[in-house]
Amino acid sequence: MAFHARRRLGALWLAALVALPAAALAALPDPVRFGIAVENGDLRAARNWLDEGLPPDFRADRIGTGLMIAAWEGNVEMMELFVSRGANVNRTNQHEETALMLAAWRGHLDAVKWLLERGARLDRPGLAWSALHYAVFNGHDAVAKLLIERGADVNARSTNGSSPLMMAAREGKQRLAKLLLERGADPNLRNDREEDAFVWAMRNGHPQIAREVGTPERMAAAARAPDSFGPVTASRPVPSRLEDLVKEMRVAESEGRLTPELQAAYLAAVRDLRRSAPAQQAAGESAAPTELPRVLEIRARRSAQDEERVRLIYDNQRAEDLPPVVRREPVTVISVPSAPPPPVNVVEPRVPAGVR
Image (cartoon, rainbow, N blue to C red):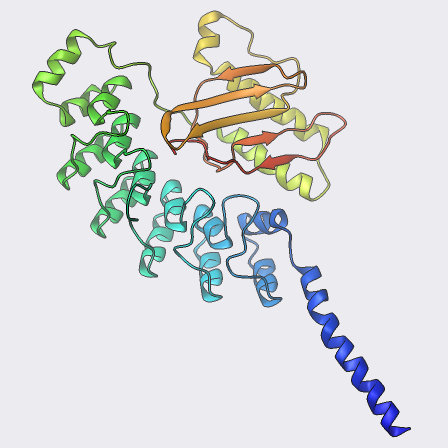
């Protein structure tokens, strides 16, 4: 009888061991819940999940791993947590972006320093976007200067052959263009379209930079044919209110509290975006949409950084083009609910918006 009792206790103990991992796994987050928690800086939730066995390089539904999200947000404490549990500082997301690149894109100087001190690579072999490209494009002078001081290649070539100097010329970042030239940037580098920094500066209305990167002869020729460089391709930021609402809708949907009021606020932000469209202002079109757009779509290609496309898509499949924008969120297609509200579907793009 004692033997049977011991055997039964042993069986119960074994069953408990087998059941424990399943219970622990059940408590782990899905990619959406994980991403929202890390974006919001929920250290307690992240630590508990890691304690329960969540891989340190677990990926959220967008941006990338927990470390990448923390770098994007500039949350050094969260970065420390994931690295202390084994997160790889040089891992890339599906767009080949590293945590260092994401921190540089957002201008988080302390996060950039922290990553560099822990072995984050400044450059990659071959044609690849770099943290310096990202910092220059967004005009983060201090970050760009730090990257250069730490040894970043000022002539790094992106996937389409563009250099950091070309980014400065495109976006009118004169201080950064001067810094790059002082540190050895080659103004004669051309991308796969045979365009250089001079062409990009002239195309986008930055003659001061064009004078820095071009010869007097080229400037004289440009003065005779100022419209020969093609249409403007420089970017403008998405209104911060629209970005905030997209994030708020994503959080609300994950918590089951999406409201008509939030949808209405999103519609108002879309109206503001339409009002800012120069083509519509010139044509005198009404700036107030009468229906809720189902999708805000922002697309670009890594090989064609000057072909960003922004559209609003409605339930009847009518599409409305808007001027190019630079998103501060790595999300390209955002499905927006209409009444009755279906789930908000934030789709991770094949290619993020902006210059990629």
